[in-house]
Image (cartoon, rainbow, N blue to C red; front, side, top):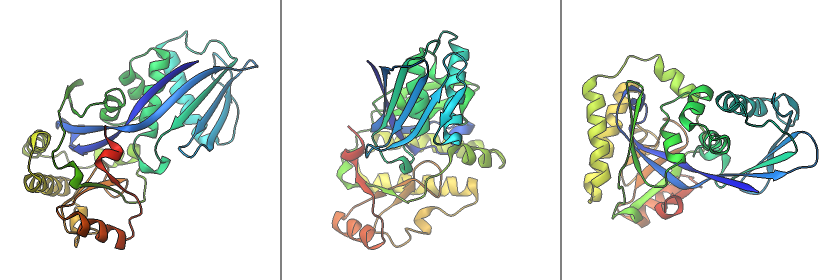
Length: 302
């Protein structure tokens, strides 16, 4: 049996503007996705995707070599998987030549959380096929690729894409105030490809905005005081809000929250980061506001 693992991701700074060259601060999560390859009686490729509760949420059979679909319990999801597998085969023609194998993927986080069920899948298949994960990503999805970098690296990282070249370096983000950070799921998963498409239709941000977002990410990585951290994330929210022509979540849903709040990744869904200067007050407010999924730093990061 062969087995591979890929980390999930959260984007602490640089959302949207990373597509225009901003340096982003990204956090790989210890929750990710694994892939196992087993022998299987038959001439086909059997694919089973299992969620974090142990339930099968996709079962598909493919022909070897051509990756033609034989059957599936969800054609749309299977077609996305088929696209990735065929693109991997283009990059490595010897990949999946033979049948008689069963592939099982296992998510270690809720599918709705937006921690990278698609990007971890791309990274897993790239490892298995022995191809460049960024090449496979670019042929299969849209975006900056920061989530692929997170999938393959366990430590917080800076990610920047300039003139087609990726710059990836360890960020060393290990906040001393980690116990005062909350990661709150808003309950609405965002579609990354659609968010990238919408953003691409907007006017390009000013270079000053791109540079300042990069500088904020660098400052966040070395910040040692919660109050300074809060000032930085509030400024970041204002800049991105100006670029998107939208109000930050801290001025809408979390206007009365006793701390600072920042969107993580696409605005309007998935997770936000909320600081908790007074942990009891913050946790009480979140519970009363009806947020059922509130994760602490050590639940997401090693």
